[in-house]
Length: 255
Ligand code: G
Ligand code: G
Ligand code: MN
Ligand code: NA
Image 1 (cartoon, rainbow, N blue to C red):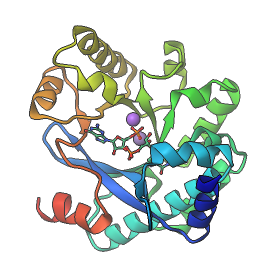
Image 2: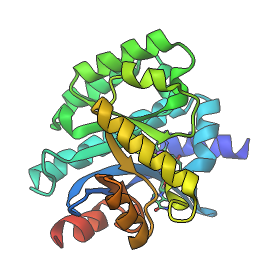
Image 3: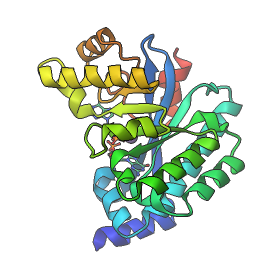
Image 4: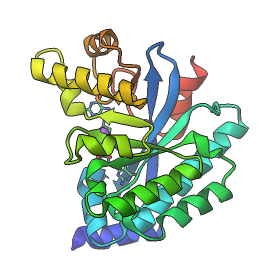
């Protein structure tokens, strides 16, 4: 209840921030960034989204918060494009909650945000999770196709941890799979995890879908992933999520 009240307050007064984490390719070139919400409470310090997003979903506030995230990320990227800090081929990845995706207002909201901001739709990547497809596959598929028709990209976040069947993969208009960090973490020690990552990369390639490995923390992980033909990467090894100005200093200005 305390958390609910604080969340209402934070949403009303826009007390959230977005941090940006770099995503790169096998030549170590930037290909985009994931926007990650941060909430700094005066007393408690940073409260993790892993803690407050589920509460926001439960009380429906996630719809408003999700809209704020999209508005903020697109204003930021529009500014960066104007300042020559963001290349049009880079993508801004935005996390979408299943609760948000299922709203009838979701597609109009995305469309309105694209109209409002000077950002090409092709710069936008929406991260959805496998589990949001379970409720009503036909309706979800239609919504995904409508989103794609706007020119926006779609990724499956935390791939491998959900319940989706492989047969959906060929149906879904998906641009990228984000291999969950749990598979990447033990890649070097655990033969099964390595086999899974290898299989996902091969399968995605055959289906014409990109793959991004998440949670890449060390050079050894990066090196092994390269050996098995992974092309896109994200993780602390390349960079942690940072506030906007620091993101630009670290990953754009100094490259
Ligand atoms: O950034 P961090 O590791 O603290 O994120 C924890 C969890 O919160 C992750 O599952 C991440 O996807 C989620 N998350 C971070 N930012 C957002 C956001 O803007 N919207 C939603 N729906 N989830 C987010
Ligand atoms: O669920 P999702 O993939 O959106 O969550 C992304 C979360 O993973 C973010 O909160 C981010 O802070 C975190 N993250 C990003 N890179 C790494 C990493 O290399 N290691 C770990 N442990 N977490 C990471
Ligand atoms: Mn994500
Ligand atoms: Na993920």
